[in-house]
Length: 299
Ligand SMILES: Nc1ncnc2c1ncn2[C@@H]1O[C@H](COP(=O)(O)OP(=O)(O)OP(=O)(O)O)[C@@H](O)[C@H]1O
Ligand SMILES: [Mg+2]
Image 1 (cartoon, helix red, strand yellow):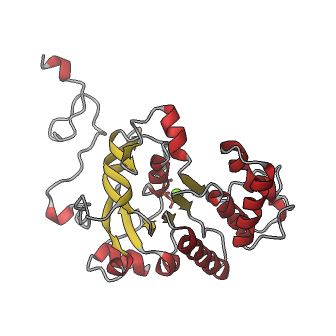
Image 2 (cartoon, rainbow, N blue to C red):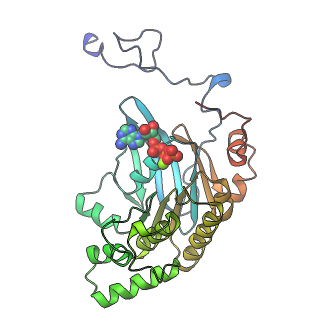
Image 3 (cartoon, helix red, strand yellow):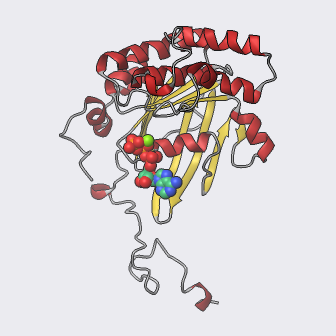
């Protein structure tokens, strides 16, 4: 029996690596002076707040590259939440788990009380209609003008008549300040306009949850500020759980009501924005002030 187990990785037993699998290293644990998770405060769940989305002990690796390592995170209902964290920590990977584009290796992702990894295809299809997603570059269809781009989800997912579709599209374009640009093609627009158009398209199905992956990347500071205002205004009007991923601390200060700081696949700290901006945690303080001095170095 013992022989059968010889080739299995034994991550906890670094003293006697099995065969040639030396590269499987154990995570340092219980070593207070050198614990890479020592800044992680952990999240007590349940938090008492109603969550639209919950990550419960989620692990996700690509090959040997462990990205999420026991992630516990709640995205509260009806608030603008931000997920902040250094590049490559898995923020986009989180978003993909929310809409069932990636599945956890272990743990669960729960949207409105239902487990996403356990959904059948038809349930997943219905669940995705709850979401509006604004991808990094707006992800507009290059061959369609703005009207058709924004109308696309309505034509695809509803049986509304063309008059009603156009009425909704015009209203959404007006809201994002693109009332007169409906007949423009995406390549005729600036980056900021494309993002606003992507935002309009993300909203046409009146989603309960809107995900923004770096809505501010590539925008100048003024346009970033305007986009933040727009996100707040539209959230005030429509409600819902908004999840914004950003690197921009100014954007976080402007719009975030709830912040989760992600690092090395877990939450360092998570809570109301004002609490995070007043955090005692050295990592959070360094990250939210953009300071080069502190526990977060180049890796
Ligand atoms: N489909 C995939 N296959 C293999 N590796 C992947 C895949 N998706 C993401 N990764 C890896 O997971 C890690 C986290 O990626 P992710 O895109 O989530 O980072 P991020 O936090 O969004 O970073 P950034 O702030 O730069 O956008 C990266 O190392 C990336 O290479
Ligand atoms: Mg990303």
